[in-house]
Image 1 (cartoon, rainbow, N blue to C red):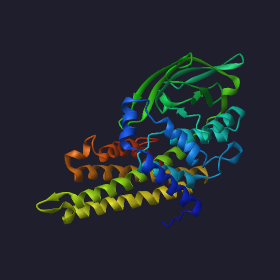
Image 2 (tube, rainbow, N blue to C red; image 1 turned 45 degrees about the vertical axis):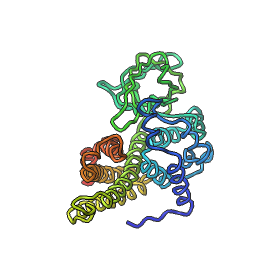
Image 3 (spheres, rainbow, N blue to C red; image 1 turned 90 degrees about the vertical axis):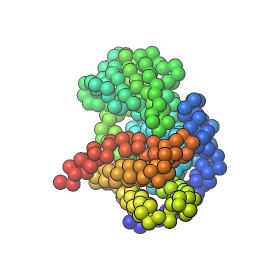
Length: 365
């Protein structure tokens, strides 16, 4: 598939890549994830104030630049290449998409804060057991239930919560602080294998004002989840480009039997197979991104094709990269181990590889 970026998109890609190469240190980000606040807030502010990537995909009416899915792809691929843990997908892609389509005054206010780098949004959607419920109570709502593995919740200033009302599943907006949760919320913080922040949330009578209900969740939620899947697939492409390049470089330097192991034909074949998996994943992501504005069935089919293709490629490339690096490939000292963990996690975000294979098959009937 031939896909060419515009001049503006190339400038966006190159500027972001230069920033990350010079100012986003992997060791520093892992330290912040493991022993610090979980991220680097000053980097997030730079994303907003210096690079403008938090505004790139939003409408000018909320301070955005007016870009779309292609700009999202350029940004997420660059973030994946640098293994950025800051919550771009949760806040800008998924949360921002839901808020933009809700188009209420509270939603627009949070969108403006996202653009300025002052808001982080997490989607509380996966129920633990029975679905969360929202009951009308006077001039507001009361939410009860449990949400599991809410990515980026410990960093969030706002939550988007799906809950069943008497009429339908609806989307609610709530202010949030994981270190001092509002009355009616208990947060159990956790760190995922790829050093992302998450939390299990228990809602036990969380009271929200009437305008906290933004909209009926569907069909906006289905689109947001597809956009999130496309974004992490694009991020995975950035990871895999870096992993393949680093593996090739390592095989040129590592000596065995008096010569570089990259000179052995069997390992050359292995690296060619890795490169072919990468190129298939790139083409699948392009197809998904170009179909994000298509009608729902076409969009879902393209996204599932991309997510399944990327899931297979991430597994193959990640495992082979570790094998070619030897035992040290899984250590904390080498970047390859961190990339392997991220590529493993990507296979389960926004639906597993098997789920998307099944959805693609069903939509292709």
